[in-house]
Length: 80
Image: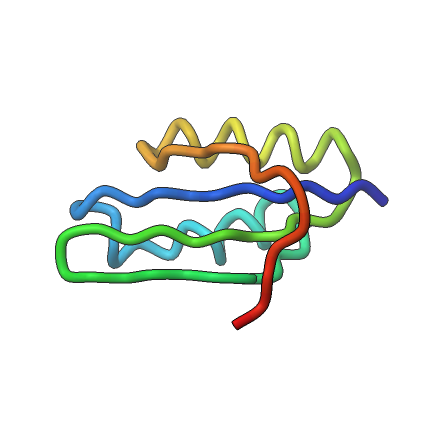
């Protein structure tokens, strides 16, 4: 199983859409929310994605196609 750490940045028009849920359901990727910040006009979330490498890659491409910005996260994610 592969693991990736990514940051999703959501524009206002996608704030109420179940993007993370759909990613997990459609691409069989386990999502683990590590940090998040949500406001009325924007939001971001740092996720650990776990699954088959090809499923993660296809899922990330799908997320990008929805209009969510996807950036890799390097290093350890600090709790708190």
